[in-house]
Amino acid sequence: MENLFDEYRNFLKDTIRQRIDFRHTDQSKGIAPPPVEKPYAADSYRIDLVTKDNWHNVASQDLVSVIQNRRSYRNFKADPLTLEDLSFLLWATQGITKIRDETAAFRTVPSAGCRHALETYLCILNVAGLETGIYRYLPIEHQLLLVSKNKHLSDDIVTATFYQSFIGKAPVTFIWTAIPYRMEWRYHLAAHKVIAIDAGHVCQNLYLASAAIGGGTCAVAAYHQEMMDQLLGVDGTDEFAIYLAAVGKI
Ligand SMILES: Cc1cc2nc3c(=O)[nH]c(=O)nc-3n(C[C@H](O)[C@H](O)[C@H](O)COP(=O)(O)O)c2cc1C
Image 1: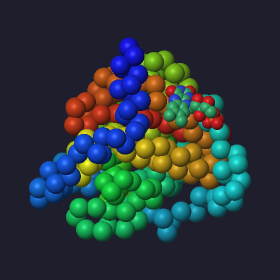
Image 2: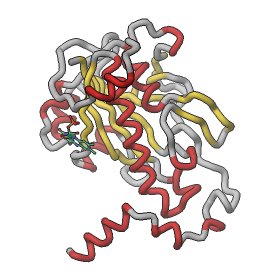
Image 3: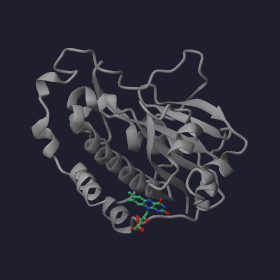
């Protein structure tokens, strides 16, 4: 057990970088980078999100107050979120602000080496106009992709979060997966810590953006790994869930 504590503490350090020969990363070897966004089938069902120029109800609140009042919220109103609300939250957390080239795109959040190794899935239980189901954000297209419909989604997400019942009542739960190779391509074994750091930035933006639409968020790191990956339909090896956050109006 002692050794395990050392091992896990070491994960938080950057000593690994001294052991990596960066001449041998896939990037240095000239291997093409993985795509900026997870590919999808051409015949997938996709929904256009509301673009930034067409937001009318995204209240512009004073940033100082939003930061001062930030808290975790677990009790949400029964009100649905609108597609505009959701469009803003997705843009604030993973939206692309500038495509640099086919290897990288800048987003509303920072990421080590601009690798952005996260994908955003949504467990949608109560968004006006959308069927209950698991969806994935397509940041390049600013669209939602339907991953699966599920009539028992509320129960399933509660079970997959070790019975945190408030998540089954949240209109939307963001579930971030990592595609580690996107970061490993550049940073080899130094990739994993920075993926976790990146996820923190994303969730903090969700906290602040939720406040700006009269909503609230609660970060969730306690979940059943295999159940969650299965719910999302990801393989658990090259892509797996790493962090969640429930959102609703408060
Ligand atoms: C990394 C992380 C993981 C968390 N996991 C959970 C969780 O699984 N369930 C939960 O109810 N709250 C979770 N929270 C919320 C914390 O309990 C909350 O941030 C903390 O109690 C402080 O309250 P505040 O956010 O209102 O300041 C998590 C927060 C963070 C940052």
